[in-house]
Amino acid sequence: MDRAERIDLSRLLELARWLDPQISTDAEHSSRVSRVAIELADAAGLDGAGVAQTTLAGLLHDIGKIIVPRAVLLKPGRLDASEYDTIKRHPTASAQLAERAALPGIARILRHHHERWDGAGYPYGLSGERIPLVSRVLAIADAYDAMLADRPYRNSMTVKEASRELEAGAGTQFDPILVEAFLRRGIGHSARLPGRATTKLTIAA
Image (cartoon, rainbow, N blue to C red; front, side, top):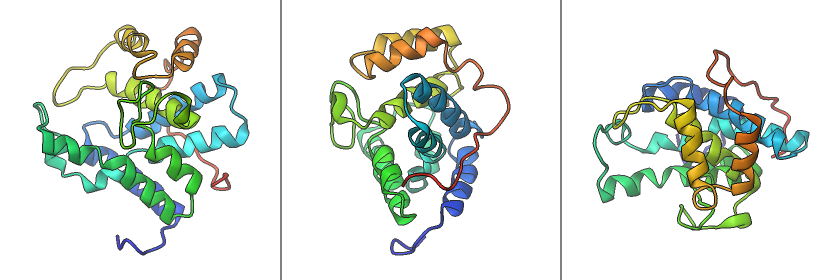
């Protein structure tokens, strides 16, 4: 895509659907991330517009990985420093694509969904409540679903194991209040059932 080209939202959603099976062995990752994020957004008390933003951000969160070589994404071993730097560019690339679709609010969420509560994330090293709330929701949903899936470098975890990892990361990687809500409500258990998240296109940008 030309950098100056305006993109319709429908094209971004098509890109997201096409990318999932290209960048992993899991063709439904983004759809499940969206469904888990919706549950957590509801638990966090987001209003209808916030939940709609969460839905769309979950579906689009990995579109920036189109700039990452597939060999890097599917590498079975540990990434070297250069490869990891390439991976770390994808949130910014996702945000840039959302901006080209006139979705600045979604772009902000995507840009920061790999920040960490303790400030050790990327791309800007934001910490705590400086990270947008929906980005914090998305970080938990993304990590949780990734842990439940096989990856080239490790086997899948059980729900119990993944929940323990979230609990261990509360206050460092993840927003501790959101993790507590996630675990208390048993969020995510239904997300691995077949089905695709649906998104209203008339959402707040």
